[in-house]
Length: 304
Image (cartoon, rainbow, N blue to C red; front, top):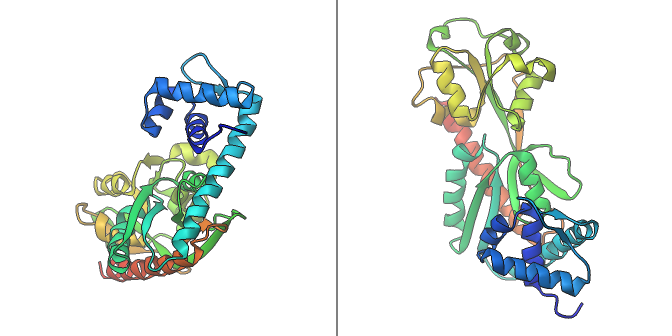
């Protein structure tokens, strides 16, 4: 199609993803009128409307939906061509868009970034914190290069590399320090504090405690592990946190930490990336750095 450019495709992809001319223009660092001109020009090149205009949000036409899917595939392939060039050179360098889930990011990410910059001085890490399903979507659309998540994600297009197992620990008010540790299947009888919906750690905790989704309305929720631990310190209830969070979250909260009975509940932390990415060998080496950092973090947490 003569006249069609990568610029047209990137602008249209932003509009299709965001559904709004203003936000799409902002993400592309151009003015809204300029974006509108580019989309009109693209429609003229295609020979049919791609966007239904009107109202606060736009909608794609039937052709626009199909065009958006093809556009994402093209942009992903172009990005991977760039990665192919990076893979053929010496030490890993350039941008690394690394996703991390919220129950890992504050505790593991600082050490990982420090280790990466020491090992690869020319690397430009650009971390992004988001819940698992958002990271998986961004990986599929080539908006991320790799992500650190709880496994399994069970996506055929993604390579999964297990890194380490991490134990769940029970957080109770300080006056409970001398009391027997309840079994995991008795936790649902207590005032259990959980992360809000969307977090995979919440689902893991529900499974551990044999709590069905229909009964979760009776539970108390928080937006972060820090909030949950502070609520426990205020005497509101008990919660579960991953082992790597202990060192950070117990600094400013009056709580006691207890290990649950055998078999102790754990989660598996791993790194994932697209199988088609030419930088797979480099990501494997980075995964080893993440693994070593995680194990060191666990050792420190065990001494708290």
